[in-house]
Length: 228
Image (cartoon, rainbow, N blue to C red; front, side, top):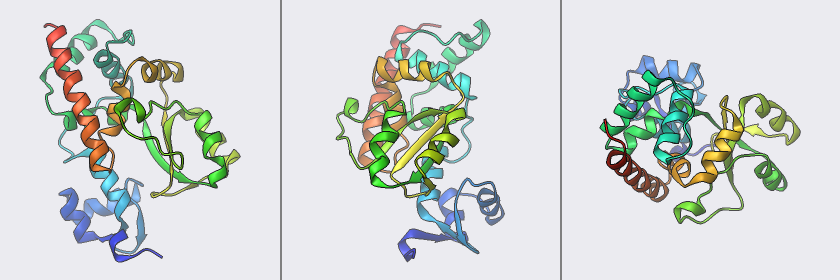
């Protein structure tokens, strides 16, 4: 049973997200936040929504553009955007100084879902994901949790095989994307930029801070090395 600290009322969600009560209901109906009863919402789902979307005033990039931006910041091989789109994206990245804004713009690179399952499947699930890894950021890996990328076409099969249940407080985070999974694997291994992007929207303040620090440095390097 959920305790008072685990839930929020419509009024509390409205204040936390800076939206009207009507918009809170829309968010619940679209699955953006989790409603546990009439006028009552799961706190974790609301906090995750806020971490990933901020105030809602920052425009997000489409998935392909977001991955192109991560490749640029990583200094990795380009994704193959058109000349005009590449020019505009470089210009936009040069203007960004706030890592939180960057994290929000990159939000649609993947859809983040959380699941629970028997602890015996954690390692097997881990083997099927692309995991940038906390260790690259100087953070300790937790063997009881897993957080990684999977192609959107494979998530249903993985969930079925390991009998996972969607759970906002679950220990398994699946980030599914339509981008070529080999390209995501390449970026994850290239350097710690992708790991920092993931960490920058963590609900854990320390992890979020570490991710943001890395992104600040990547943005600085980008401005220094890429001229208009």
